[in-house]
Length: 233
Image 1 (cartoon, helix red, strand yellow):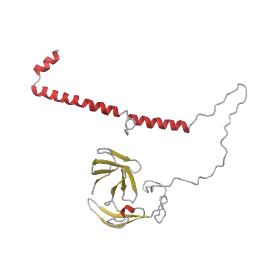
Image 2 (image 1 turned 90 degrees about the vertical axis):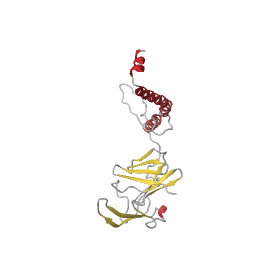
Image 3 (image 1 turned 90 degrees about the horizontal axis):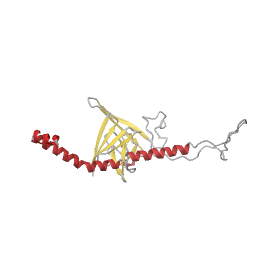
Image 4 (image 1 turned 180 degrees about the horizontal axis):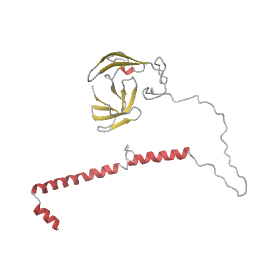
């Protein structure tokens, strides 16, 4: 039509070439966009719309199961009515079995004391103590404090001594198909090994783990600190 004729004869050649180039790029992106949009409905893709709907549906079903409707009854007019529910017979007593603890609590977050006065952890029975060797003041001050944890068997041959660790010797170990992070306080955390470019957020510890490349990880401690880990061996 008239618009096409005006475009063909009035626009400079370099602009027409730029438009054609961008148009070709948009057309090439079409199949990929269609694929990505279809992934949003997949229930097996984490954080997709389909995955979120599945979680919401499961949570709704669980809530309904826990909050079953009340007992049905018929109300007779001009009479006193009463509804009763008989609970199952059996004594109520303290539970003697609990799920065993698999992780020590973070003493920096919990208000309750997580260990005895002699540094024995209540959850795991592990001993933990810290010792400051020296402090270097300056613009980038260094507080060389190392921590001993009796459960830190991964550091039996550690450079600071058996089962001693500090913020300069933390590391990630490959475990099965995931990662184990040995933090400076002697506790360890298990994380999934995400594909390159994806991240995992630990809301309890406020840690964000990003897999930057096949052999490097970025650990963000909130907004205050970023640590880079490179694979060796």
